[in-house]
Image 1 (cartoon, rainbow, N blue to C red):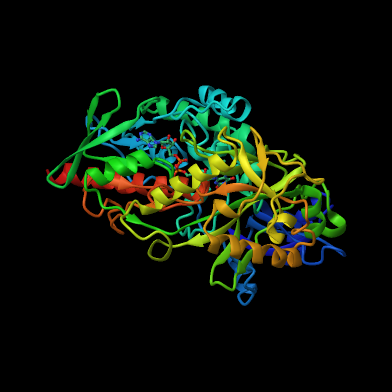
Image 2 (spheres, rainbow, N blue to C red):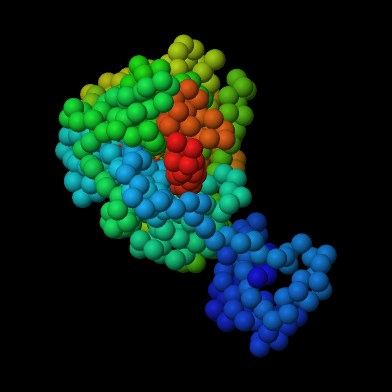
Amino acid sequence: MIRLTELALPLDHPESALRAAILERLGIIDADLVDFTVFKRSYDARKKNTEIKFVYIVDLNARNEDAILARFEKDQHIRQAPDTAYYPVAKAPAGLTERPIVIGFGPCGLFAALILAQMGFRPIVLERGTDVRRRTKDTWALWRKKQLSPESNVQFGEGGAGLFSDGKLYSQIKDPKFYGRKVMHEFIRAGAPDEILYVSKPHIGTFRLTGVVATMREEIIRLGGEIRFESKVTNLSVRDGRVAGVELASGERLDSRYVILALGHSARDTFRMLQRNDVFIEAKPFAIGFRIEHPQSLIDNARLGKYAGHPALGAADYKLVYHASNGRAVYSFCMCPGGTVVAATSEPERVVTNGMSQYSRNERNANAGIVVAIHPEEDFPGGPLAGVEFQEALESRAYTLGGSDYCAPAQLVGDFIKRKASTELGEVEPSYKPGIKLGDLAPSLPPYAIEAIREALPAFGKQIRGFDRKDAILTGIETRTSSPVRITRDRTSLQSLNTRGLYPAGEGAGYAGGILSAGVDGIKVAEALALAMLDDLENN
Ligand code: FAD
């Protein structure tokens, strides 16, 4: 198979133009092109006011491939295509009785369980939250009626933190084994649109993701796995430095010497439980800030020029970084085109924001986190859980500033820059549910973060005209950008540094950031666990 890269075509090209362009580029006749698939499609918007083009990477089968490759030997855009197929690394022996346990059913736990099930290891998944249907109801209760369910919310429950999200499915992780393709193929098999495999920044939006996750759950069960909701793990049993089982909130105990910890970044009580059990944990950097909202049309115009609103391009996104004079890096995080800002707390009397969208991305506003990177040594010195305590204190303060009823504190960008409390909205309508309370955001974050964001916003306005417009809205606060801890694992075995058989994984353990990378990490630990289990069987 040959991979052809950098094939540019006009935005409105007919479908047949792609085949014609391949033939022309390779200098072959139609009969010699057996078939082709689009591996990736992105767009080049550098000339947004003259011509935006689609840029394709295609994989193709042709007659006489060796001759074609030899002819284009010096052309870096025509190469042998890599094998991106997924091959299972192990197969469980018949009659295997011991079952691995997966704690958490977010993207990491979902893929860990699926891969284990596909290899015949019949995992038991323990998820503290409820299934997607119940969880959707519980989550909307906070957004509509200010009623929080601490075990069933935006962070906890089937599908994990990514369920009510923008469903962005891209990541910058290194992926030499193409596990990301496996994640995409499984999502498509479970009902996601085919395009997620080839568009450069795929997303599926929250409602589609909900259906996909429920279908994947059924597949795991069909393959012999078991998924238990409302099953919070509250203790570990560790013998001679090796995990021996888990204990649930109900008091039930389950034995297993193979446990994947796919907890997510919000399982603060479980981080504390791990620390009590002396599992090695360390503090790690994360970021804090606000969500910012603009009209989506402002972003489309800045990014796509005369092509703004073109149906083939959809709602535009952005990625911004600024280095402030106090040494802090300020950057945009989890940008959601045409989406809404959501209440994302899992704990009573705390406020934390995030963003989500539907597949259509056709809500009025664009939103993104504008966050400042913070580090343990400098900003929250102390023990391994100092970052957790720091987040808790900030989120409690935000709750009070928002009026102590789950509304979020907010301020207009113009007022924030002028250090003046906001009293009135402009044209931009905030989307945060259950509501915002206008005022002064300065007390909500440490002064270094406030100063850095104050300096960054006008600088971002130079990159995206209108980004610092007076009536853009900042909603506070963003704290759960990534995990404040790392549950450190051995690089080769992927087991906890000091607790054998325990596989920390995904975002909560500090090994992923986002749906795709969490899924990929789930695959990696599932493979490592399966191989270790087979090894143990052989040697005992
Ligand atoms: P999680 O998804 O957090 O899953 C962990 C699971 O473990 C949870 O279901 C939890 O209930 C369970 N659990 C925790 N403790 C226990 C316990 N003791 N016992 C049993 N179960 C337990 N990422 C993207 O890539 N694209 C996006 O568009 C995007 N948008 C987002 C929008 C929102 C509103 C949020 C909150 C996050 C978003 N993210 C997005 C981030 C993404 O959701 C996470 O990176 C991803 O879900 C991490 O996967 P995970 O499996 O590691 O952890």
